[in-house]
Each structure stands twice: as structure tokens, then as C-alpha cells.
Image (cartoon, rainbow, N blue to C red; front, side, top):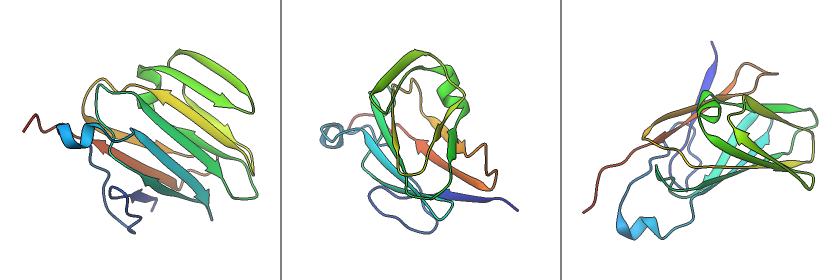
Length: 138
């Protein structure tokens, strides 16, 4: 059975949740998610991700093999991908491959709350998800 990893805001719990809250106090924080791939696992460090605000995901591969990062959400967005000094952009991508010891930066703006699932297309048991939730202004 495939293992799905979920994480809490700023905490790397074995199983948790990244929740994006649309609150004025939290909106000032950077919409950045750092992902390290180590031992065939996505490890997260980051803050709040808000729908309708730009998101930066930085993925670093600390393993000794190439890994993938693909998501249906990336296929629905205008996406900018930066790796090794080269930036590509356009509407929708299937995903990216990250070679050992390198990193990839993905920028996009999610247009609605929901589930952001992803997985490694090379190693199908590597999976995770981020939930983007908007609860309104307080």
C-alpha cells in the first residue's frame, strides 16, 4: 500500500496537514514551502499557503537518485520552473525531475482551495498532499 505523507504548518509530523488559512495576520508570511527529498520521502518546512496568492515551492533532492515531483494542480496553472540557472514558464506542466544534489523552484498561484496531491513518477510509493483551505476574513 502506498504511503501518503501529510504535514502540519511548520512541523514535520509523521502524519499531519498543511492548512492555508486566509487570515490577515497570516497573510503577511511568505507563501513558501521548502521540500527536501531524503530517503525516498518528501520532508516539508514552510509556512502558510494561501489560495489566490503566489506560492513558491523549493524542492531539494538530498538522495543519490533522481526523483520526480508531479501534480495535477500544476497542469491547471500558469507555472514557472527554475533549475540550474534556467527558467521555463507556461500554462501547466505535468511535473519535474530533480537530479541528486540539485534543487528546483516552482512558482504558481493556486486559484482555489482544495487538495494539492503530488507524487514521484519514478518511485510511485512516494506521495504527499497539501490542503489549501480558505476560512474567510476574521
